[in-house]
Length: 113
Image 1 (tube, rainbow, N blue to C red):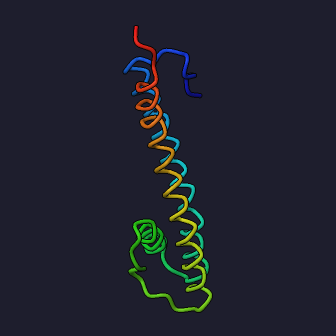
Image 2 (cartoon, helix red, strand yellow):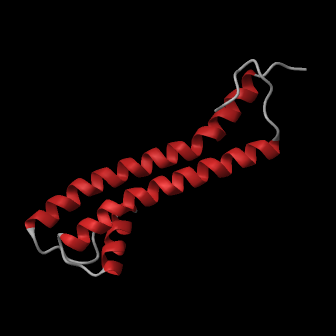
């Protein structure tokens, strides 16, 4: 996955390609994390599809639900889902930052030629 400390640092072009791959992976991970929220708001709160998407995306951004929640189960679902989606966001951010941090640390420990 990443080069070993005894190997040379990869070229900038390879690094950009690696960063792009990790960006795609983090984006897919975020989109997959939104699916349970959208489905939950669709079936638990009986919201329209666009309203369910807006609710799930607003929880991803750390905001309150713009559409009022009616049922108690919907409020419990929102609490649990907000914890889940924040964890997904942190993991996606870490996935995106991993190649950058690795390159910085690898350059600091790379042998001078």
